[in-house]
Image (cartoon, rainbow, N blue to C red; front, side, top):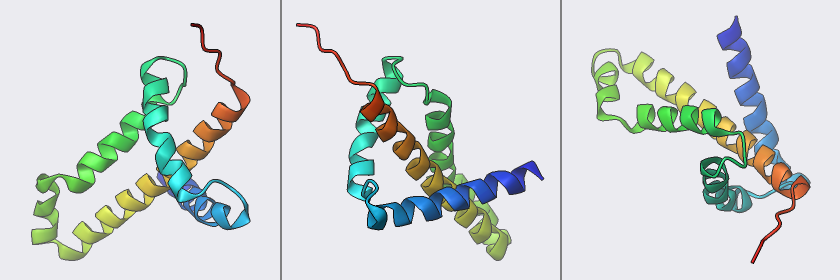
Length: 114
């Protein structure tokens, strides 16, 4: 049941994020541009998204890993379905997390000390 709810949340976040640009939300380009800043903020300990970034990195490794080619060779349909679910979750997670990060940036102005 929990997996179903997580998948539903990921699909919902993906749908919201894809339509956000048309409704005045951040564009995909703005979201992709926020990724390096988000990684830096997590590394510096300013932003709390470290675990989510680790999960997204693990999903990326799972999708691009050559070891994942084995299920496609033996059980073609299952191999494609698990990749599709992983990519969909990853896209939704990236879009949701960049949306959260951009909101965090707007509400937490930086003070630069020289």
